[in-house]
Image 1: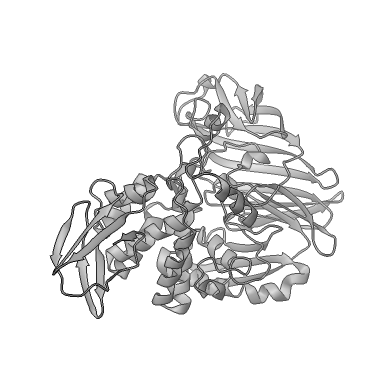
Image 2: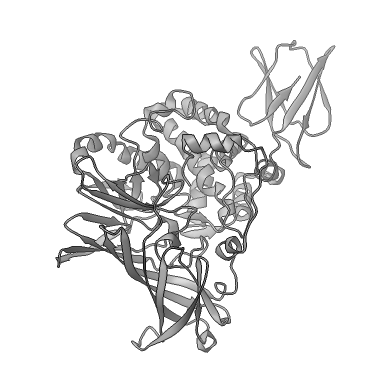
Length: 548
């Protein structure tokens, strides 16, 4: 989910530290791999949506191609949130047959149970169902944080419509298996049927467009796997231009869609895209979706990392709505939304957390990519300073990893504390080339996959050669910030860590004038000979507190 709005931040900070929220049965249904989900795997979605812009409603259907992977239960869970209504479901008996059987459907809140003799389906075989639906989708209250449909008008009064649904869920506007761990391996088609001659943009490539009876029907296709909250649309009076980039895997198509009257501003602001992609390919590996291309699309809200169709709404400003979140001055040298949201193509869209509780993998590594881009354009020192500058935003109110199985993402610290974790790993690796190859390796090892925190931890530890078990436990699973306590007496300096998990240590450096002394504090007192005087400092590349 994107950065919290200022109003939301104020409300958030008024909550007592450690505030928890009760989970419901609906949260469990949404966040767990229950009996209506565990026996089938999504292979492909074919979504059709027709818009009624006057009534602000939609009708549609979604053909879900699925593979039976375990013994089926008596029902299938299809997610579609109120006030949307599932009208009917038919089962297509095989991929080679047009024979359809109507299934019974039973509603339970935001879940629809499809009742059918699924036990007759063969394991390891692929089938499909078609879900027909309609309704008035939830209107976005404060997109993209409190998402839904944004029914807006541009400054000329023309329709400008889009959707944002991370956290809220794709089932707010189309029926699906709304689970982050199950992406359609064979991609997705999205057909948008829109009144008038407005452009209707979605993920992937435009494969057909026809106009008849006052409607324009546009079909877009994504060849690569895509997570549900990335599936999107943009409808408006857009102007489009195309470009290409010579990337690591060949020619990458670049497409830009902006409101017609913003073309000149956009061409200037979006010129950074090529430099950004070259930078990210160097650090994080080839752009993960060459088959589908890269698009940047102007949206009626701040931004989102919609795969291959990144939403842009930063009002053509540098920084984050003109503000440098690092407070170093370096964050105002580039457009935050272009850089951050595009960084998610590597972490979030390519490498996706299986459970939302592990979304620090998305936001933490992507937030660190901001530092990498700063380094690409301004040098290593400024990139490192930018990274450290973000740390003042860390609250430490809840552990970075959220609660599993209940569709819960975790706190705002998944951004800056997640970024701090990556920064500290780079410093501990003490070899930028090894760190870079590790980062690229994450994208290659888990290419187009969903992963757990443990998989990421194990991979990083293996590739860096560092023992990071206690480090990850400290910064991901507790809210405690290690406190370095020290004192100088006579010719001896004594030090230890407080507030740490078992086995925790960091390779710190004591700085006294021109002299630097490496130390590795633990929870036990250590003593070294000291003649450097009382005016000492410690390396600032680690998220710790100092107590003298």
